Image 1: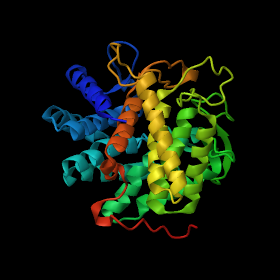
Image 2: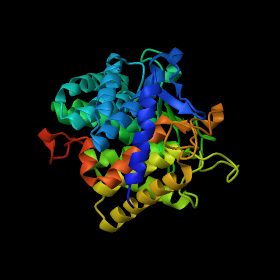
Image 3: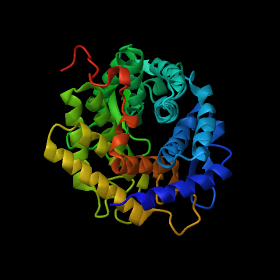
Image 4: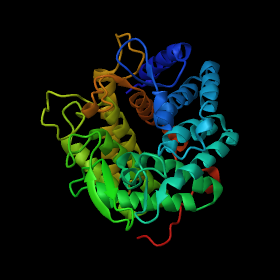
Length: 390
C-alpha cells in the first residue's frame, strides 16, 4: 500500500490542531478536543505524551519546522512531571516526548529528563509482590498500594531504555520482575488478559484478578489485550527471555482468533452485546504496533510474516473504515472507547491517533524502528542480561 495519502492526512489534521490546542488533548466527538482533566492531578497527564509523539513523528515525516517547534514547546511543558511518584504512566509520557524527541533530533540533551522520570517510576515498585503499583499515591490506601494493572506493561519501555542508556541495571531488573508478575497474574491460559491484579501487602501474595475498564473480572478488555501484546513483545526484544516471547505469542494468537471481520475489536472481547456494542479503534491501533514489534523480534520467520501482515491489514482497515475523513472531527480515527463501563465511548482518542501514526510510520518506513526501540547506540547489539531468570 502507498501510505503517502495517509501520512498527508495526518499532517493536515496535526497542523490544524497545533493552531487550536491550548492544553493536552484526550478525546473528542465534535469539532474540538476535550483536554486533560487537570483536577485529577498527575493522573490526568497520562495522555500527554501521545500528543508530543504525534508532533515528533509529524516532523520526521515532513521535515517542517512548524512540527519541530511545536514538539519542542509541548515536550518542555512535560518536564515538571519527571519527579512525580503519583502515576505509573511516566513511560507513556517521557518515552514519547523526551526519548522519541531526542532520537528524532539526535539530541541526547532531552534524555536526562527521561532518566529522572524512570527513577521516579521505580519508586512505585513493591518488592514483596514484585510489581509496580497501578493507581494512587505510594503511601496511599492499602487497596491502591496492593493493585497493579495491565496498562503498566506499556511503561516498561522507559525502564529498559533507562538501563541501556545509563548502564544501571536496576531499571531493567524491576521491569523484568514486573513483567513476570503480570504474566503469572493477568495472562490467562487462552492468551486473554485480565485488567487488574490485587496483592496482599504483608506477604506479596496474589489475591485475585479483577477489572476496572472491562466488562467483568473474567472478560478480556480489548485495549488491555493490546497493552499486553505490545508490552510482552517489548520485554522479549529487551531481554531475549523465552517466557516473554511465549506470552507475546499467546496474546497475538488470541487476537487473531477473536478479531471481527474488519479487524477492529469491540471494546471487550466478551461483551454480551456483540455485535451491537462499541468498537475501540485505539485498541486496534495499539495491536498493530504490538504485532510489528513482535514481528521484528520473532524467531520464527513464518510467524513474523503472519504478525506483520495482520498489523498491515488492521492499519489499512482503520484508514478505510474508521478514519475521520469527511468529518469536522480533528482526529485521525473515530469510534474509540475510553471506558465503556464509565460512559466514555464512541469518540476519538489521542492515544488511538498516536498508535495509528506509529503503525503507519513503522509500515511505511522500516528504517524508523530504532526510534521506538529500548536500545541506545551505546548498546546497539547486546540484549540486557538479567541474572536469575530462564
